[in-house]
Image (cartoon, rainbow over all chains, first blue to last red; front, side):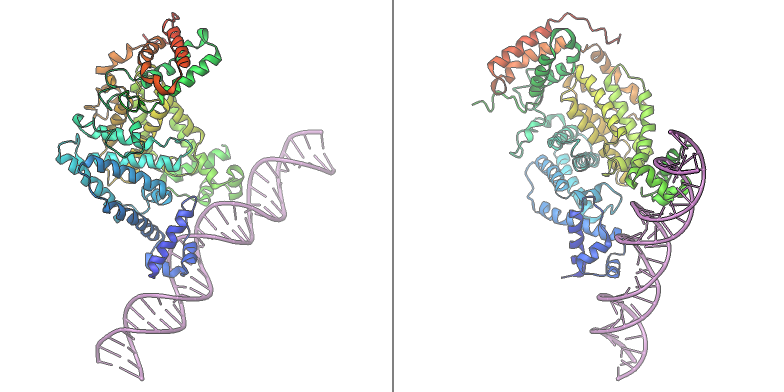
Length: 261
Length: 261
DNA sequence: CATCCATGATATCGACGATAACACAGACAT
DNA sequence: ATGTCTGTGTTATCGTCGATATCATGGATG
């Protein structure tokens, strides 16, 4: 096998196994059965090695992404791209941190292509007159928000145990960059998993828009609960009421026209 | 001066001057006129030194933030918090990267307090019935989006030369977490200087007049209660919940805690 | 005075990034 | 065949870094 490929493979493996994302060139050389000068002749620098390694990991990911067929609706492709971005970040946290959380290896080929694919989808949306802002600005916003949630999930899993934050942020950004006439197709024509829990309150369908959402009311009441704490309820009653309000505010979907047995 | 404070000051200075955010304990010791064992006795570890340094920079930032007076409209405070967060990231890029772009020194006191301040603002919004999601979820989303744009501005200034991305993202997230009746200001908020006075012109009238009355929230929730009836609650639970909401909506206690005119 | 603890200073260890110096093999032209 | 050039493998080394062992000193306190 090519020595360069062997070194990159070993570096990628060590990087994935490293808990802190820091690997040493010596360890890479030992794993790849190569001396240090060979590594420095091939990559010139440790940054070059890391860049090539991350580029390789991204390339494996992008090859799958490139093979994906374009949907008829570019909005579906946009959502798929967001989800695959988040999935890649969670699957390769160390490589992702190197690419999006540090100044090492900026603007590698794969990262540029990822951004290019995103822009292509957004330009398709713009061609259909569904974008509220320019594709360049929309791409900036989508990329920044996506990296924000991905880094939060990677770096702070304990503070952000909620796995739905990616879907929520995705729908928020989608609603922000799309025109108003397009915000009705958000929650239904999507992957069958559980992404419809993002914004069921106000605009998911015609059924709920008429009545005030109980989630919002529960949130409001819960926040105002300390004002009534003193006189009328015991501590236990308040605790139980708070539990129930929490249950209501976390309800996923309340469409009465759907799901009722 | 305290040796610990001297070391932290020197470390902060070196960190701010470092182009890549990597400082050595030896350089810190030389700058602070201290031997290495002293540093290790005081901070135990390099991570401890970095954590204390970043904590110190954050504390300076938070002292300004804490001193800021609360506005009558929590939405104004939310926007101010967002802008100051972005400004701090741009003013202290290296410290910001350490705190939000790496696993070093997670969950320090200052970072926790920053999140707590954000949650306080969001809870005030929730108490006024203007929040579409729970304060915890809204805080997650706001923080993730804010760090996303800040890191994009810091790490990729050439790819993101647009300085309005922070304001755009801010309004997108604001529109996403607020209820529909409150989302009328996102049309144009590009003015970077007058972020404090741009918003309240059109909405502060409707917003401030809304009192954080638990009675109103109870009425709203009670009206929406049939939507959550099936599935999550038993008939007896629903009956008791309805009784309690009735008790809350009939409360006659006057809230003297809030002195807003 | 004796004991103990906090601080200071020197030297050192192992790991790391990076490179110099040298050896060796093949390709090619003359 | 000889010489030169080039690419590659090997050893040894340099300077830096994080971290620590070791010893000395200087008070406090009893």
